[in-house]
Amino acid sequence: FDAVDVIAAKRDRQRLSDAQIDWVIDAYTRGVVADEQMSALAMAVYLNGMERSEIARWTQAMIRSGERMDFSSLDRPTADKHSTGGVGDKITLPLAPLVAVFGVSVPQLSGRGLGHTGGTLDKLESIPGWRAALSNDEIMEMLSSAGPGAVICAAGAGLAPADKKLYALRDTTGTVSCVPLIASSIMSKKIAEGTGALVLDVKVGSGAFMKELSQARELAETMVALGKDAGVTTRALLTDMSTPLGRTAGNALEVRESLEVLSGGGPADVVDLTVALASEMLDAAGRPVGEDEIRSALADGRAMDVWRQMIRRQDGDPDAPLPVAAETEVVTAPDDGVLTRLDALAIGVAAWRLGAGRARKEDPVQAVAGVEMHAKPGDTVRRGQPLLTLHTATHERFARAMEALAGGIVISETGSQAAQAALARR
Ligand code: URA
Image 1 (cartoon, rainbow, N blue to C red):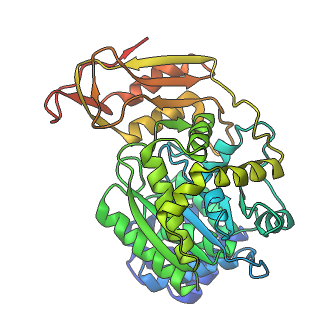
Image 2 (image 1 turned 30 degrees about the horizontal axis):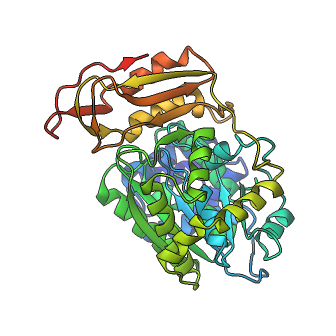
C-alpha cells in the first residue's frame, strides 16, 4: 500500500477497504506513515466521513496497535464510565468509589485535560503524594475484592498507542470534533482496557466537542454500536454541557467539591449525575441497585471509605490539606437580575488561562488554579454580589481569564437576554 493512495481514496469520498485501514493504522503506529500524511487522512475523514463498517474496522486496528487488558480473572464484574469531556466534570472522582461499594469493580483508566476541558489525572494529582502511573499488577490488586475495588490511574503507554499518536495530531490539526474519529478514539481505549460494561456520558453544548444534540446523538449511537460489536455492554447518556457541572472548575477545587459529594453533600447537579451514572453502570454490570440505596452510600460514608483506600494505595494522603491559590480575585454581578447564562466554554477557557489546563501536552498545570462559581443559571443576583472567584498562582493571568469571560455571563431583568454590562473585578 501507499499512504498517498489511501489519502486520495478518502479525499475522493471512497470507502476505505479493510486492508487499507489495517495497513494505514499499523504503518502510522510504526512511523512508516508520516505525521503529515496522517494529518491529511484525518482531514479527509473529517470532511468526508466514514461508514459504520469503516469506523468499526478503524477501531479494531487501533485496539490491535497495542496491548489488551483482561479482567476476566477477577471475582467481580467490571464497569467503567467515559465522559466525552466537559467543564467542571469531576464525576469520575465520586463515581468510581461509589460503584465499587456495590461489588462492581471500576477500572477507570483516565487521561489528562487538553484545551479547555479538565482531566481526571490532573485533578487527582493535586492530592499530596498521589501517583497516577500504576503497573498492570497494581491495577489488578486495586480491582480485586481484597483491594478497594476501584482504580483511577493513567492508561499505560501500551494501550492503543495508535490513538495516543493520532489524538495528539488531531489536536494540532483541527480534526478533533468529528464523530468517526472521536468514536474510534474513545472506544479503542475502552475496549482495549477490557471493561465488561461501559457507560458513556456524551456531553452536548457549548463546553463539549459536540455543540448540537443531533451530533451528540450520532456520536452516542456510533459508540454504543462499536461497544456491542466488541462484546462490551455499552450504554450512553446525553447530558448538558452548556453550563459547568457543579460550582468549581479547576484541579484542587474540583477535588474539594468531590469530597463534599463523598461526604453526603455537594451541588445537586453533581450528585444527581453521579447517582444516575452509578445506577446505569451497576445495571449494565448485571448488579442493579435502586437510586435511594446508591444515595445512601454517599450519605453514610461507605463511598468515602473506598475513596480513602484508593488514594492511600496510590501513595496519596487523603487527610492532607489541598493546595490553595496565593492569588484570588472576585468577579461581581454588574446588575440586579437573573443569571441567564454562565457559559461552559467561557468558564473552561478562563480556568485554563488561570493555569488549570495546558496549552501543549508537555506543559505543567497548576493544582490551585480555577474558577469557583457562587451563582448558577436561574439564580437571582444583586449588583455587586460575588459571581465568581478566580484562583491562580500567577497574578498576570487574571486579565486574560477576564477576557475569556466576556459574553459568557449574562444577567437579565426579564429572563430574556439583555445587554450585558462590563464585569467588574475586585
Ligand atoms: N476523548 C478522546 O479520548 N478522544 C477524542 O477523540 C475526543 C475525546
